[in-house]
Image (cartoon, rainbow, N blue to C red; front, side):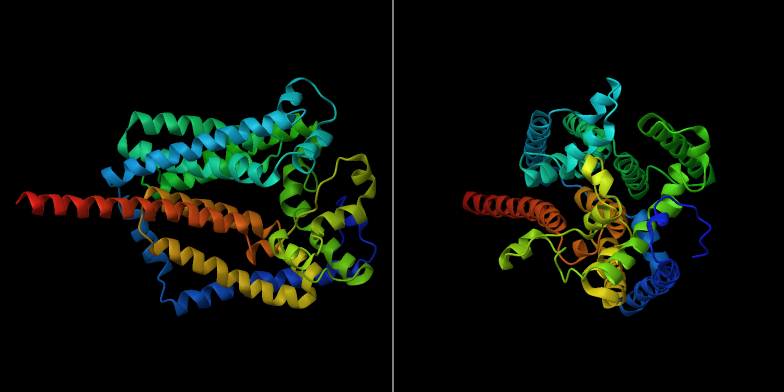
Length: 405
């Protein structure tokens, strides 16, 4: 707001009034989102401190018969994921992470081609190659730790390798950090790790050092730029992530009309024959046309309020903030109170890490997120199916024993 950031993205603003407007809207979000979460906590009679510590102490529930069925289903899903990763590699002309080690100079272009330029089935890739392997690896890891079973360990190692690959193949820096974070949370929830100052310091130093190396290798940045407050990883966290919000406000406040829901998922828009438009892509096209023309630009993601404003104006920010606060807290309370088994723990960890990612990626995913819905029903379906099979087996066992008597 004070115009002292000297940030490369905010220099694209034509009207500096939006610095002040954006600042006050961010203050609104910082107050009313947690306030909504607090009100939900009160309405549900949720004791955040007590119930969370009870959850940590609760044992992971396992069932030998049911877990055998889950292993078969998990193995089947893992094989489909493996084929999806192979399919993705086959479709891609060049894999960015491989080209990096070959000394390629057009890494930005390769990254865009690997994402937006993928010519295969995007839904199949996104679900089975990119989406499911990390979640499946968490489930397999918990089973391997708790059962000490070799088949579960082998399945985990396969899924772990796939997950690492899909986290780094396109040279994005965030996915691998979020994947590591999910493992830290899993170990906390199953009682394998207790965070203290020493562990937090080690994780922090290692993470930041690794991030500097990735910026140096991928971005070829000087040490001065790496450690500067408005470039490198520091600038990325405190300025680059929020800057597109101000660009959203100016673009959809002064230059073009609101999208009026055109950022909603295709599954909804196709019913009305409306073309899908990502506000973050539109902002990139308007403010960085030269990068779009060169094929080295993707989207300018920012806090959810950017997309909410682009579609529904200031009412989108006001109501969207309240809605997301409600959504996030209900999800959290639900998982804390659900049974503690490997599948539900992994889903809990997945949403704990990925909801914040979506918060700085868009708003419409909170209205309808087909992948979240698929993920929830897939794994809950596995639990129900294994439970149903167990009940059927129990019923016929009782019938057999009665007949024998």
